[in-house]
Image (cartoon, rainbow, N blue to C red; front, side, top):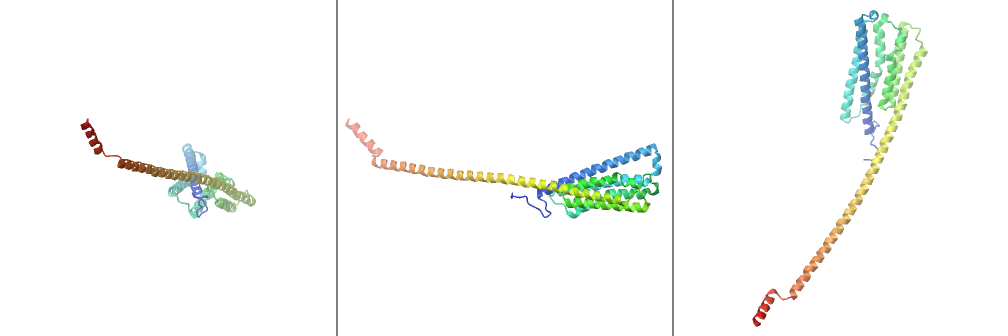
Length: 294
């Protein structure tokens, strides 16, 4: 392992890319859960209104009741497919294509504007809630949810992009319906202020994500330094053990040589003694002679 984490072409280290993929998987799971809850809530509310034959149904077009839950369900399915794509990239240790990342972010952040536009257009003259209130309804709040979740990309540019697109879309939808319905409650300064606020939220999310990314990068580098230090200590100890082993082997070889010299010396002395001493036949012969003399 090198002293620093290897950096890929996209500017992310392998470990940081893995963390980002995990964050995006978490983001998709959150959105799937969110869309599922909205879908179930809409289904329960519409079902209750139908069962009780509530008078509100007379002022709500049927296509709105059908479109609302179906669109949310479609959004949940979209996030499910994106989740499968992320899991595949994670299993194959691949990085995300920036074009796909920005495209997905654009589609996700367009969800509130699309809902607001379709509901107002479908309802037409049967709107039971003023357009100005619809533009400030829960779909508007979802802009901030998407911007917060964009920080999980750990990319300040993408967060700023998300905030910018959200602000532009909200301003466009608001100005369009202000002129179309001639709504005096919608004033341009208020619309622009909300749009700028949305964009600023994107910048703040980008700032926070950049801080998180830097902290994570520093932690990964510190981990690498610690691992490298431990690796150096292991190599140093291994080198010492190897050197000691060679010394022991050398000493063992010297002992074997000395032992061989001693054994050879003993064998040589034995041969000298055997050369000077009479043979066994000589002793046997003399012993027999002594016995005969007796």
